[in-house]
Image 1 (cartoon, rainbow, N blue to C red):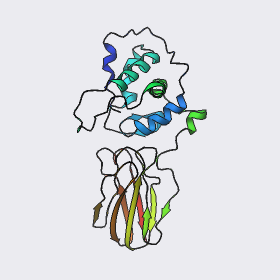
Image 2 (cartoon, rainbow, N blue to C red; image 1 turned 60 degrees about the horizontal axis):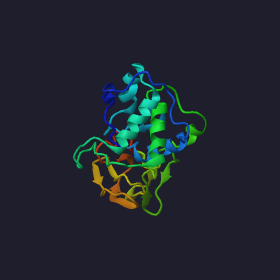
Image 3 (cartoon, one colour; image 1 turned 30 degrees about the vertical axis):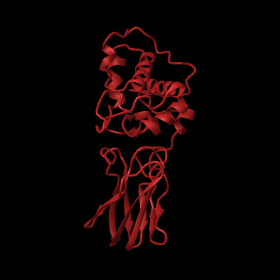
Image 4 (cartoon, helix red, strand yellow; image 1 turned 90 degrees about the vertical axis):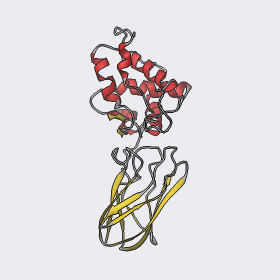
Length: 237
């Protein structure tokens, strides 16, 4: 979600508005949708997202909030940017389609962003458990010569785990991606450097390798994804 840097707030919005965000908004739903649809492009500390292709939303709003802009104003800005994102080429890493989410869903996303942007601390209560931490799954092991490393199904920049293991020898690595955000699987280390095709919407990225004992790094090569945390360690014994 390519939200424009929010210097636009300086242009004609009243700094005297209060912090009353839409009281009908579902912040839990907003956090879940933000993580699925927006987290691959944006940093938002409380959501645990680390995308780097779009603006860091904590940084984008920090100065405006410090200058006295209410969080209800931030809500309005985010809704407007969802409807009318920055006009950039479709092949740009920061491209965001208009109306990626609509109606109440868009309002819920905007309300969550407005509520937590540049706010220190961590989410509490239901918000704290609304979205699983990226890559927090248990380590996985290869079975019958195949290692399954699915991408996070919620669209976060992560595989289901950051730790995997396999015996030395031939190995097929499969990474199913159920999310709409494109991912692939790549592996490097000990002279190995392999990359699968980029897939989305249920596709599976695959690589075939022959591995010696040692440590290898698996990761996504889509620009910004590895930098955002989509990587892990494969231990071969």
